[in-house]
Image (cartoon, rainbow, N blue to C red; front, side, top):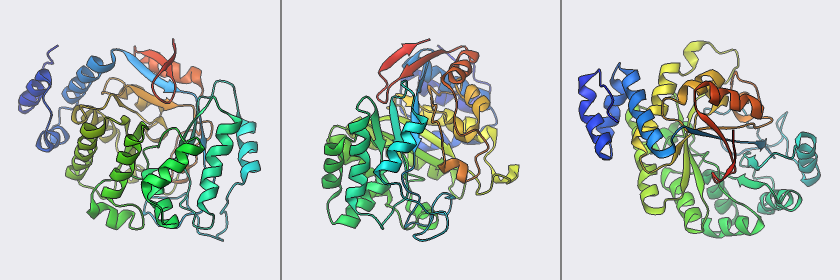
Length: 364
């Protein structure tokens, strides 16, 4: 397949794609700078169709936030509370099970757990959270604890990250979510998340997980102080690790959300930037099978558009998402499986219900 290139400066990039060659950071900057967004989309769609045909994946999952108490002070977070602060909470095992029971349906395949870096509870609390869910719902995958949380647990306990991960796996952990990556440059992290894992520590946590046999996820939180070059450096660091381990299943670009739901348009990423970033992610991350369009951040209709900009996954039902919504997301906190199928079919794609590891449950 050959795409008709309108911006002639993109022709060398198109030729690289046709030959299956890896794009450079300089190529990525050209893709960000061109005004010809539709050609960028066509190239990303070409690559995605080569990898996934017209399949678009989704999962029925439940989002759980066991605690919002956090030692970190990230500049983008509206969810965290300090110990003792009004609104701070930490679920015990009974509260956790009650939370799940109240929202449960038999189609749920995955628990997606993200919380604060809570120093007020022992590491055993985090192990028990995984163990209790796995014992009571063995049919569900447990996706829990970001690479930054793994580093926090190691620092809190004095164990190595490998020891931390091995204990979590023994408790029933199936995979790591992609959070905590933010932007993988130290300039960004020093300003936006200075108390959290460094670039190297986040990458090391996932490398160790991969070497232990876990498949994991990777994100990028864009739309604040990072430069376009830093976004591309982030992607390059991920694909370098993927070259070594082949342990990442999917890349999820996350649009930064303002701290207030009432924030104006100028405090949010643009639709052009969201779609362009998804497309460039597909073109840069040649060794990732999937790029996810995260409907919680960019909205269902823009997510539908993203399916022709290189995305092959639109995440899941979530039931009740809190992190992005506490930071100003305008979308609903959950979505039905029928609505997810409607979005995919509306883009003339085939809905594929999956489990955590992209095994097919059902094609629609």
